[in-house]
Length: 191
Image 1: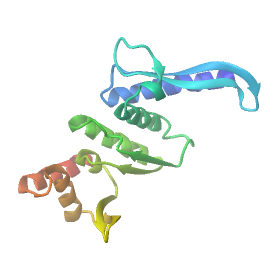
Image 2: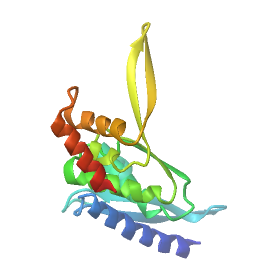
Image 3: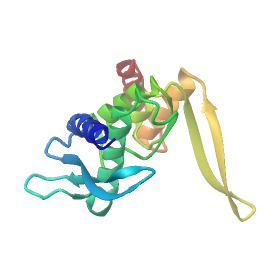
Image 4: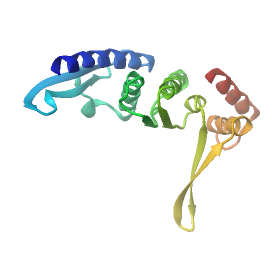
């Protein structure tokens, strides 16, 4: 069991490291650390994920050193690495795009789309570069009604409704012709 776990740990390390490179974290390092524990029904191993986001920094426990954005990208890389396995049937990404934008946001969107080829994915994002890759798009609006906060979820129809929402995400309150054109371009590039 220990030998099999260590072999799987090496494969996971390689796959997560490759995913981090795709996510513009080419200097980051990820590793699965094993330590021996008393033999139990789960084996004689304890595992821990180690991480370093920057060159020259020592590997340390992921849970202690990763920022929110770094942890989100490590999780995205890990879920992509496990996408073809039976590790999970649904992946939820809550702002996995925190602290990024532009080309990296497009890569995140593409990677999440790749994962969706193997399992159901729910992704909460504020970035149109990520949202453009979705098969279905829901808009969630929060507001106050009679002194209580309410959230309203609306499924957006493909086409004009979805394009308008992506344009709103790009430009803010006032949707311009230029923003609509950029939203259309995002949707075309996401195909």
